Image 1 (cartoon, rainbow, N blue to C red):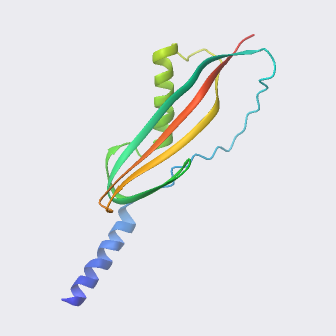
Image 2: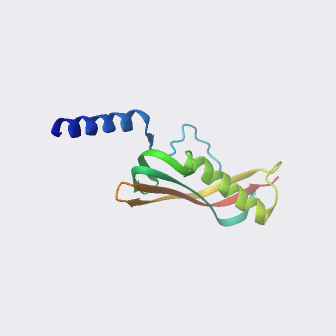
Length: 141
């Protein structure tokens, strides 16, 4: 019986490792755009626009460190796997509801702030959440 329990534990650990979901959740940008905001060529269109996204996982754990989110889990039961992408889409959706369409406008987000949070319930359920808050400027001629 003791060997059976040991084999069952190792089998479960192996299956979880090979089929589970793992995400680091942090957004590392590889491109950099410098914009000079000291000239009078822009106007602030919106302040404190926000967007957020979350996902729920069974059998897992999440840890939030500022804008960095680490999740190790077996089964996603709600939400999207790409939390930063979903949070940015929610950000622009919230902007469009209040300030109109973004198509054809010279917009940029400034003063971007990321935050992350995680709910963990005894390694049975985890729910990571990413929030984005920023100001939006529009460049004018």
